[in-house]
Length: 535
Ligand code: ADP
Image (cartoon, rainbow, N blue to C red; front, side):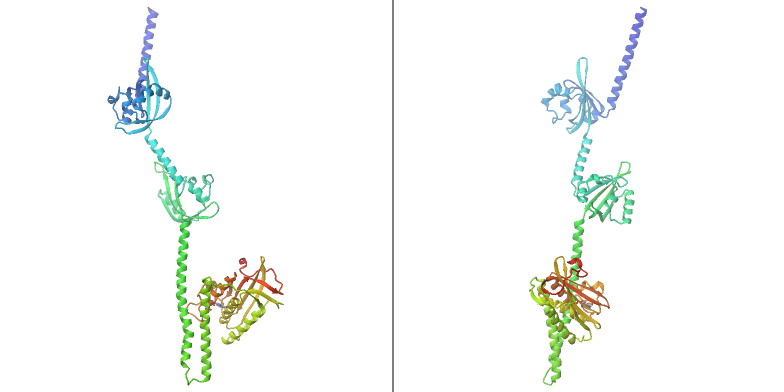
């Protein structure tokens, strides 16, 4: 009996140990099942529910006494997942095929609300029967986040705003399509680069410091207008908002920048402001012009009316001759004013045409010389020396041009030269130059008069302006002479400008392309003055 009994004892002890182990393992399993956050459900091969853990109760909403022993079909499988009539087929074949896999499975809570779970199935046998245990993880929240992320990704990609993200040091970690489109950089060229360095912002130092201060205090920063550089070096006008991105603990893990390209808007605003400025300026010039005009028309008209009233039977012949001279001068002055204004409006309406004729330049300039000598006498400027300076040894030169218009320009410039010169000389002449296969003539009219300061040199060519305003004038005139000269030179496809020093004198130049019909001048290839780039 001894060994046999001992063996029996040993066996009983081993059985006890095994029982103990089995109980421990069952308890362990039970505790896992009870504390699991996933629903763990066991069914038999016909789909009847045999176990239902607390997580299953929380997720699906049924107590175990409501559900144990019931078919899964009645309760939690969504009919959108498996139709009632297909369930048996699924239990017999489909379920087995899914064993060992993890897959998405549509179920429903008590009350009918459908939701997606991630399901893993295992099968086991006991007492000759087959059982399936399913672990259901509620992935509603994960799905919602995935969907949200997809939507956000789409929004970022298709946004018309430029979106970029950086790490806490300002190193770019993400740029959207609009960024690459606007800046011309591919994403791989900027990701990893420091934002201010690569985008070479023209923003000022103070605002940059304020930006960092604001962001580091975890506040959003808005910039209404600044410029960044594109890949090709061009500038973009931007308005933007930068926000710190915070983690759950409130620490800064990066920055989100949203920029809006306002280059077009800024351009329109600038153009609009310039247009308003031009309109104001033109309004001011027009009012000044009207004031000047009324003065300029009134003076000769007053002389004409006043002096003609004075003449009666008692007026002596000498007085009649004297008055008549003044009346005639005033009449001519009026006529000149009206003709100039008429000519300007004709050119502005686009109706003025260039009528070319061959002219002998020396003869033409001599005519002008004679005309100006008479003018000198009339305006008591005979003491001012007057010289025509033509190229050395030039006897013959005939060009094809509009004689009347050329005369008009020269006479206007010469009259101004005398008008503004009290002592010294007035010189004028021309030069012929060849530039880039085009022959140009360049005239000059110089004087030793009052000169024009730098600020006014461009202004005097802009309609109805005088260096002194309408109410503050030492010289008569309405400021149309140079405007007309400029418009006429432009009709010739040329350019006009002035070199002048206040108190020293002025030289007006004008140049335009010509056809030389006949000439004894040796034409050099030479530059034609300050505005070389014009030709
Ligand atoms: P205006 O009829 O007033 O002379 P212009 O258009 O001929 O009109 O000239 C405009 C202004 O340019 C003049 O009022 C004067 O202030 C200035 N100006 C023109 N020519 C000269 C010059 N040779 N010397 C100094 N100032 C000049």
